[in-house]
Image (cartoon, rainbow, N blue to C red):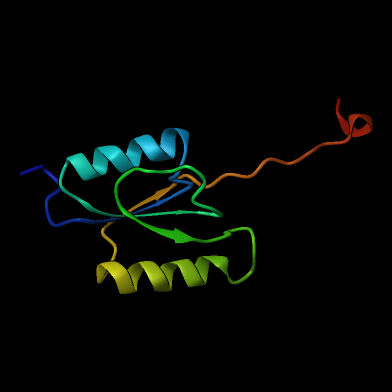
Length: 93
């Protein structure tokens, strides 16, 4: 059994890149994992997927509620959700 057996983890931005790699590592270490992102895309990794847009006012509350309901609590939070902001060229130094 892994060193995280029995732990409950939530990974935001967990369907691609670093987030997906973290979710896989947590799973291989024995954690029960919820993976969240705005959409599943082509994610086929471990964990229970929850669609959540954390840029909205209700997104974080709904994600916390759904993840807690699924896992029974959260021991590990990986806040990997990110957004990109388009800066108009006229404002860029």
